[in-house]
Each structure stands twice: as C-alpha cells, then as structure tokens.
Length: 336
Image 1 (cartoon, rainbow, N blue to C red):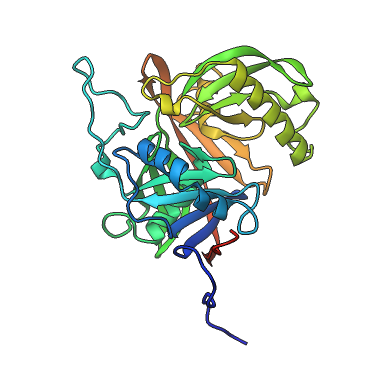
Image 2: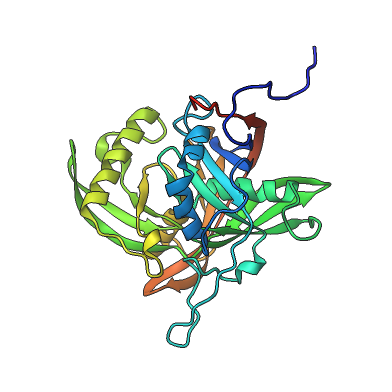
C-alpha cells in the first residue's frame, strides 16, 4: 500500500522543520532546509550564531535531541551568504581564518551554522563534505555543475571554506575541501585530568580548537575499545583543558573556545599539528579511518600561510558523503 507523505492535522507550534539527513563516514549530518525564521539578525555570521544560540535554541534541541535526533546528531542550518566588510589593519588585509574570508563573502554560494547536542561549533569537516555534495545536488551553486569537479564556496563561522565536488554523468561523488588556515596553538601542555592525573596534550586549530591526547595513555585502543569509553576519556580531557588552558584566536574571541578532545579523528587540526612538528611535509597525504564505518578520509597540507602570528597551513581533506533520507518534523505546543 502506498500513501502520500504528509503531516496529519495536529496542534503544531511554529512551522514545519524540513531536513535532509546525510552521513560522512558514519558521522551524521541533518541539514535544515526550512523551518527557522527567514531572517536571522546579525551583521556577521558569528553574530547570527550568537542570535540563534540565545533566541532560537529550542529549534536546535528539537532537531538534535530525542525523539527526533540522538546524542551524536550533528546539524547544519543553511543561510544566505553574509556580506563581510574586510577591515584594513596597519595597511594590510588580514588573512583568512576569522569572519573575514579569503575571498569576499559575495563569492560564497551558501552560508552555514553548525549545531550539535551541546550547542554550536564554528567548523565541521564531515559536515562540509556532505554540504558540498548537497549544494551541487540542490543547485545552490552559481551556474550549472561542471565536470570533473564543481567548486562550492561555503561561508562558515570560522571563514570561507572551498569544497570541490566530483561531478560526472549528472551525479555527485567524492568531495575534497580546503580549510581555513590551521595552526598548532601549543604542544606538550600538561593538564590534570580527573581520575587520570597529569596528562600531556597538544592543542591545534582547524576552524575550531581541539586538544589531542594519546588513547594509549588511558589504556585504550581507538580501533578496539568501546566507543563509550573513548567518549568518556575525551570528555574528561576536554573539561581539564577548558579549565586550565587559556585559548585565544588572532582574529576573533568568538573562535577562542575548545570544541573537544581528539583520540580518533579530526583531520584538519591533526594535519596542522603534524606539519608543525615536522612529521609531514606539504602535499604529503595521511589517511584516517572512521571508527564508525571504516570509511577513509585523506588529509594533506597544501599551502603554508599565517594566521595572526601563528605559522599556519591550508589543509585539504577528502571523503565521501551519502544521503539517508528526508523528513518533515513538527513540534507540539505543549511538548517538544
């Protein structure tokens, strides 16, 4: 029996939330197509992020939390690109890595705000790979798709990120993207982690700040240990770094926060860290395997640059994203 997909009459609060669900190497992404206010106040993307966090967070929780989402759900709210005046400091235009993109915001095809179960981020590599594919399939790019690759400029809260989407015979395939300048913030930092004592971490930036720690230090193996154990350790390290290390970003204090601790993935920031330590050179690829599906991502530093006073690199990350479904959600007036 076939039936029309529709939402029956109900005591709904606000507009329907229409989404496309995707995954990149098993990492979920829920792309919001409609249901948020069409106009979100703020003269920069970071300002819009603050407004959404302070005034529209009930929509995030409706989509990320159960019963519509789950604890690992990740989201992306698509917005029109935000014009950003490029300030001149000391006679020089600042490099990419903040609200000021490499190219003028007018070159962006789409802007995005990232969300998850705890709040909002400024960058997400697996989401950018999925959004690159979606932007071409939904014709959000300027002009018709081009073979062998279609370029997609995505304005993220951390800056402009350029994706290159494989396109042939009317179909999209793999995606690679070039990051904002990524850099090592601090290495061999000692923090006290509750239940584990002194732990040495590195801190790197790849659109967001991450701490890096060795899973072996905690008696864990990223391929064999339980996911819950890895998450619990990463959370403990994150809490320790947040309370004991003062972060700063050269161009925006809105970017000076620790997103999390990496034991298993995080390609952009990890490549920047390895390049800083002299473990890899330019255009030397590294392969990372998803613990969820075994899918592979590749990363390499493709250009040396700076971000403020930090030596930095532009990182190219490549992977594949897949569609899992589309949904139309409603919220009841009394219960969400």
